[in-house]
Length: 228
Image 1 (cartoon, helix red, strand yellow):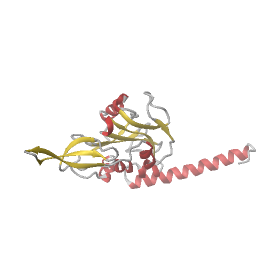
Image 2 (image 1 turned 180 degrees about the horizontal axis):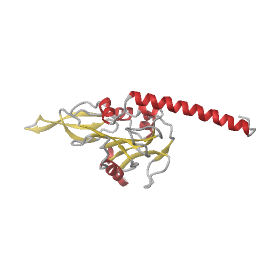
Image 3 (image 1 turned 45 degrees about the horizontal axis):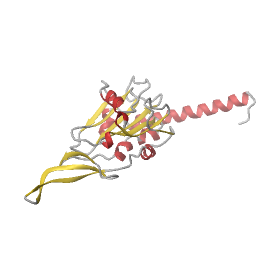
Image 4 (image 1 turned 135 degrees about the horizontal axis):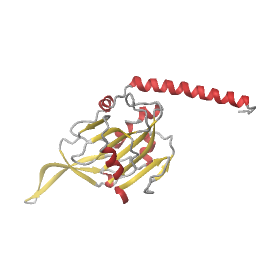
């Protein structure tokens, strides 16, 4: 498939290459996971060599997708898979707090790389000073030698080329984790400078501003003689 895209969904503006399908911009990360057909898991299966008619372990395993049993990569015995559901759950608190909205998601190279991208709403900063339009990108590779990557980027990822561009960004706000240990979402949030207090503060402020906007709308409508 063009641009190495296997599956792809987007909210808002369509991708320039015309692939994928549009979703609502108020979906939860879990809903986006299903819309993008990424609700599959991976598992390891031992590799063997046939020697004199007998199966002999070669000390490696294959990483298999359970939806179609496609072999995604050959990995070491200590490889720790990170499921797509774990990757998308990373966005859950941010989206539920109103700090972000899911923007794009997809599978590249027939499942070898899965990504999720959330647009950061105005007023929510990953660290002091970052108040330009930007995104939070989670790249979850099911591929030997590739690390999990979570980062702040200004690139809207829609294909393999834009993913490569985003991952080459010199942002100071990024977190990488190898597959030799279980992914730690709290360590990633700490590296990105995100705290629970920050999210709580944003949610409180957003709720307050939302209530002020509603009051303003009612006042304006009343002034214009509009019944609501």
